[in-house]
Image (cartoon, rainbow, N blue to C red; front, side):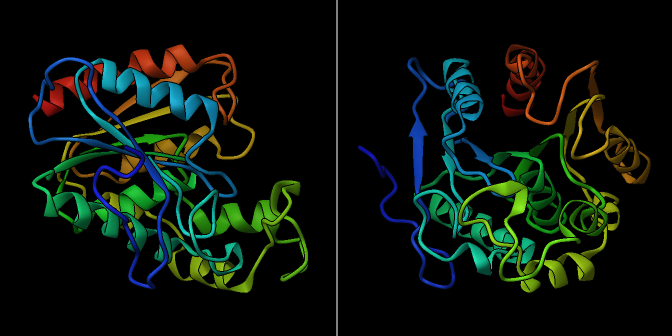
Length: 249
């Protein structure tokens, strides 16, 4: 069944595309589930995110991966993408899971999806544990560094068709600035996994999150690994799975 929890819509009425990987054996954590969120200009169907979801399910924890509105096969326009809207999208997914008895949850986010996790977990107690994979911390600096030279409404982010740089995202990122303030509010177990050869989000972002955090998150450094964890998918899985199982038991 493609949508085992029914159609999930955000507060704007936009359908959020998702798929669930069920644990092949009895779940190690009945009533628990891990949500996987992608990065900016991406979607739920990146091959390494699929591999991670499959590994999480194989370890006994059902996993749900979804595309934020305006991305992949979800409803909405990419031009309306902002961090704040994606925080709301994540809340809508958690609401749908809570309605069928699946909360609290684990959240695993990559890149901007990592920043979304920090922003949501800072106030949403339904997130039991948090994993940031090459997570953005200084979101405004990232947007200016990567996309500040683009013409709003026309320039393509990371040269991806349909991913148009927009003022809404620019202004929202400027308002947020950095998620270090929210990092200080994270009270649940938190794991950061980051390659020190990341060409988009500097490894120093994760170090700054660790410094800002109040409850000593764990940090896994993957030497020589880039932003997309190219060739290091198994290392990510090896770092995440044992930690996630420990937190979800």
